Image 1: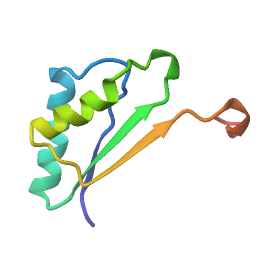
Image 2: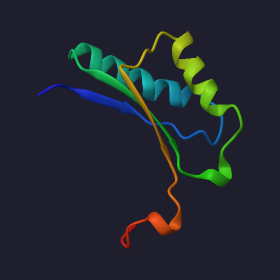
Image 3: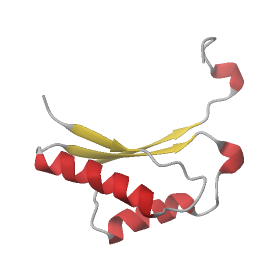
Image 4: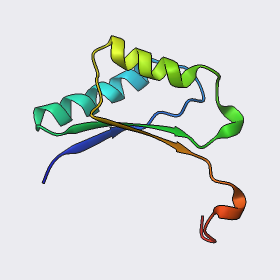
Length: 86
């Protein structure tokens, strides 16, 4: 089984050392085990999104050498498209 780690920051503020530490641990574990480091931007809290935060997340990870193998972005669905249990 292939190791896949995920770093899923929310763009509701700017990257801080705690975010970077979490990303570093996930990155190192994936690479040590010949796995994948996945970046998943979780912008599900539309009311609290900070403009420019997504770009800052990408830039910070790139500048620190934490390159991701795959990336995705999760956005809020409209209330009418949600399943009854969500």
